[in-house]
Image 1 (cartoon, rainbow, N blue to C red):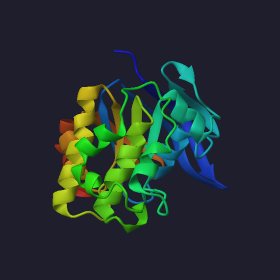
Image 2 (image 1 turned 30 degrees about the horizontal axis):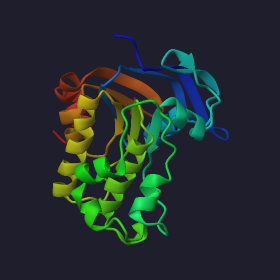
Image 3 (image 1 turned 30 degrees about the vertical axis):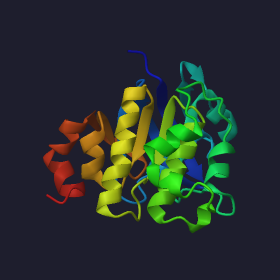
Image 4 (image 1 turned 90 degrees about the vertical axis):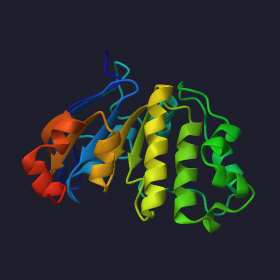
Length: 234
């Protein structure tokens, strides 16, 4: 199967500080790929580089076979890449419905309507006319995911979707992300709960100080003794 996203040897920096060095990953259509690593490993930087938030200084990013280096976030969104960032970044002074409707739905992936999002996250139905800033953390995360899907992505980037959520809500949110596979949407997942991420992922990459140090199937990574010791607390 042809790769939907291919990242080849990219580098990225914040000023003089190199955050990514010779990073290469690939994602196929409908695949869930987890990016694992300690805080400061470069996980968020990688997502920002792919979506155009942060320019790369070397290497190439290709989406659906075409180079996308230098594209702005709104341009990558129109190509079919949605980014649900850490912190959610919803519009707190707009209603839930307005947050969903403000999205430019030109990504070319499966079409989602507001009723589709409310069916996926029934709790948002009860809050549809409320200001988004008044939602709980879990409800805000549901809204952020729903807004990302409204862009009709073929690839969606999730940065710490369970951050600050209870175990019950974490399970629900990650289950919702896993359900996107059936719709053919590819997922690149950065998740603090590494065990949970590996349970829903097909493959995983491990980042350490800006470099990929391990790649394999989710089962291979989960069962690797050094990964278990370093990241999974075994």
